[in-house]
Amino acid sequence: MPTRDTRPGSMERAKNGAEPARTLYIRQEFVEPWVRRCEAFANAENLRYFVFGLIVPRPEGRSLQFVLTNYPHDWLRMYDHFGYIRLDPVAAKILTSIKPFAWDELPVVGNRLKTFWNRAARFGLRHGYTIPIHGPRGQHAAFVLSGTDVPLAQECRQQRFERAWSFTNALVDEVFGTYLQQDASIVKPLIPKQRQALSLIARGYSIREIGKALGLHSRTVEYHLRGALERLGATTREQGIVRALLNGDIEELSYPGRLRDWCLRFGTD
Image (cartoon, rainbow, N blue to C red; front, side, top):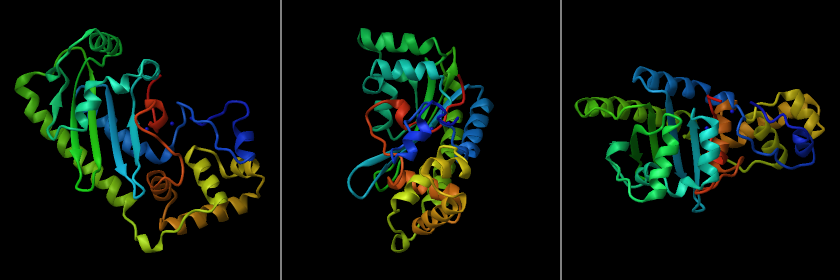
C-alpha cells in the first residue's frame, strides 16, 4: 500500500453515505501485480521486506501518497504509536538524497534513535538500503529493501544499487505511464455515486455488496462505475482506481501522519 473491511457496521456506514472506516487489512487487487514484482525482486536480492512509495503533487498544492509494502503489521502499529514517521532517518533522507544509500551509512545519534533501531531490529528491519527517485515536477518515489541480520557488504553495494535503481525506474514509469497519463481536457469531476462506487470497488467489495450498501440495483452500480471511468478518461477499473486515488477523487490521505493510513497493501501478519 489490502482484505476487505468486514467489521460490523462498515457496510452500514457506506450505505449512510460515509466512507467505510479505513483499516490496515484492506486488500486492493489492482495492485497485486506490482506487489508480486516487488516481492520477487526482494527475494532475488535475498531480502524479505520492501516498500515502494510515491509522493505526487496535486494542482491544489497538496501531495498525495501511494505506498505498497509487506512490512509486518506489528511493526507498523509500533511505528505509528511512537510517531516514528518524524524520527525515521530513512524516511527523512528519501526526500533529500539523490543517490541510493545503505541504512548503515546513516548516523545514530541520541537515545530515541537508538531505541528506534533496536525495535526495528526485532522485525528484521535494522539493515537495508533505499533507492530514492525525484521527478521534474516534484514527484518523489522510493524503493526500500530490508530484512537481513547483517549490513550490506561494501563490495556489492554498487551492483545492488544499480539493479534496484533500474527496477525502481521501470516500476515508476509503469505506474505513471500506464495508469496516470490522461488527457486533462476530457477528465471531469466524479459525481457522489460514482465516487462511492469506485471507492468501494477499490476496497474489494463486489458489485452486489456495493449495491446493497448504497441501496442500488447491481446494474445501477455498474452504470455508475462506467460513468466514473469515462469521467477519468480510463479504460479499465484498475486504471480508474489508481487515477482516482492519485487525483484525490477517492481515499484522501495525509503526510506526515500514520503510516498505516497511506499504505495500500500488506503482505505479512
